[in-house]
Image (tube, rainbow over all chains, first blue to last red; front, side, top):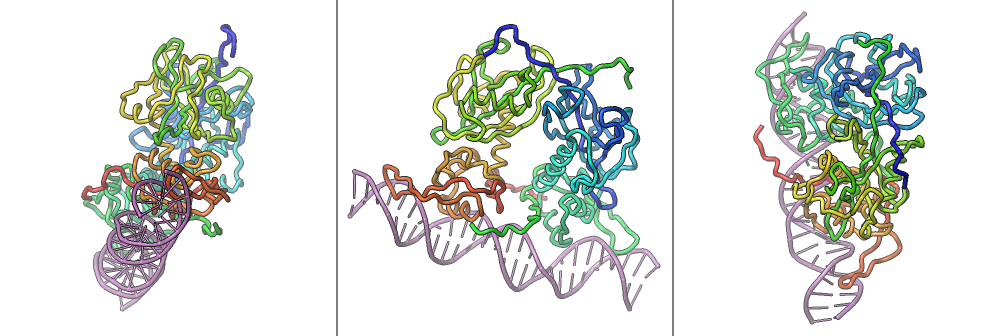
Amino acid sequence: MHDESWSPPTVLLTVDLVILTLRAGRLCVLLVERGEEPFRGELALPGGFLNNTGEAITEAAHRELNEETSLNAEQLHLEQLAAYGEPERDPRGRIVSVAYLAIAPGLPEPKAGTDAAHASWVPAEEVLSKRARLAFDHEQIVVDGIERARAKLEYTSLATAFCGDLFTIAELRKVYEAVWGVELDTRNFYRKVQAVSGFIVPAEAERRTAVGRPARLFRAGPQTVLSPPLIRPAPFPTNEGT
Amino acid sequence: MHDESWSPPTVLLTVDLVILTLRAGRLCVLLVERGEEPFRGELALPGGFLNNTGEAITEAAHRELNEETSLNAEQLHLEQLAAYGEPERDPRGRIVSVAYLAIAPGLPEPKAGTDAAHASWVPAEEVLSKRARLAFDHEQIVVDGIERARAKLEYTSLATAFCGDLFTIAELRKVYEAVWGVELDTRNFYRKVQAVSGFIVPAEAERRTAVGRPARLFRAGPQTVLSPPLIRPAPFPTNEGT
DNA sequence: TCAAAAGTGTTTCTATTACACCCATGC
DNA sequence: GCATGGGTGTAATAGAAACACTTTTGA
C-alpha cells in the first residue's frame, strides 16, 4: 500500500468550547470576538491550541474553560462533542479541532481571554437563525452542541448543570423550556420530574420570591441516567401517511 | 500566558473503526491481530494513519473501511464516534485517534489488510465481558461504539444498516434483539415497527424459508429519525425508592 | 395433517395529557 | 381580600404489554 519510508502527516490540535448557560430565561452560548487573524473581529467559539506539556485533550478543554469562565471541573459539566477535521476548515493549515460541550449555571458577564478581544453571551437563537455568523466551521459546532444538549436533557440529568446547587422545580422546568424551545405544563412537569427516581432530591429549605407561595428547593440527585426519560414534544407534528 | 515564540505541539492522527455486523444472530465486531509493534500479535481495531494527501478524517475512515470490508460509502453506515487523545494511549508518541462506528450487513470472512496479520469477526460479548483483551484503549472505543449503536437503534433507523437491501420484519427484530441483548415479542414488534411512519416500506416480494409461512419483504424507508421511537427495555429493573 | 413461522384481534395495564382545584405567601 | 405562583386530584386518552388465535407454507 505504501513504502517503508512513508510517514504520516502531523496536524495541529485545538479545542473549541460550546459553553451554554441560561440568561434571563434564554439559552445562550459564549462567543468571543477574535483578536487575531484569521477572522479577526469575527465571532468564534472560545478555544485554543493544545499545550506542549503533554496534556490530555480533556485537560486542555478544562484549561480553556477555566480561562473563560473561572469555573473548575467540579462546578460544571464538560463532555466531548466531536472532532472536526475538514482539510480547509482553518486557513492556517491542517488544524483538527476537538469540540467540547460545557454547561454552566447562570454566570456574570465573562472576562476576556488572552486572544479574545471580547467575550459575550449570545442567545442561541441568534446562531441557529444565522443572524450571528461565526468564524471557521464554528456554526456547525454550535448546532451540534445545542442538539447534543437537547437530546441529553431527555435521558440524563444534564438539566441540573444549568442550575445552581439548589433550585426549584420551576427553575428546572425553565431550563427544559429554554433549551427545547417549548412550553411545558407546570403541574405535569412538577410530578413527572419527581417521579424519576434519583433525579432530584428535596433539600430542607424553601425559596421565597416577591410574590406567591414559597417553592421547595431541590438539589441534583445521584442518578445521571433518567428512567423513565423526559420526552421532548415533537417540534413539528408527525403527520405523514405510511 | 505564553511568549510570542511559543508554538503548539503537533500530533499524529489515526482513525480506528468499530465495524459491527450480525453473524448467526450475534453482534460481532471486526478485530485484527496486529502484525507490527507495538502490541504485535494482540487484538486491535482496524485503522491507520491519516494520509498526507490532505484527506478529510472522514475520507480516511472510508478508505480504511474499504480496505477491510470492500464496502463503499453507499453500502453502509459510517459515523464519527469520538476522539481519543490521552497522552499515554500509544507508546509510539502523541497519537490522537478519531474513532468511527460502521454498521454493515452480514459479511463473509474478512480479508486481511496490509498491517493486519488476521482479521476476524469477534462476538461483542467477548469484548464486553473482557474475555477478549484489546490493544491500546481500543476496549473503551468498542464499548463506546456498542453503546452508541444501542442508543441509536431507539430513535433512528440505524437497524436497517445491519440488514441487506430487502429484509423481513423478523430479521429486523433479530437486529434489535442481538444489539440490545434482549428478547422482544414478535407480534408487538411486528406492529410497532410498521407504525413508525417512514421507517420501513413494503417491497412487492416475499421471502420463503424452509418451513413456515413466507414473510413479506421490506426495505428501508425515507425516515432516519423514528417517531415514535422504539424504546429498549430497561436491562435491570428500575426499583429504588426516592 | 402436522409443525413452524407469519400475521391479526383483543384485553389489560400503565403512562401521558389536560385541566379543575386547593394552598401559602406578600401586599 | 386578592393577586401570584406552588402544589394536588382526577378523568380522558393514548400507548405498551401480554397472549389467544388465525393464516400460509413445506413436508
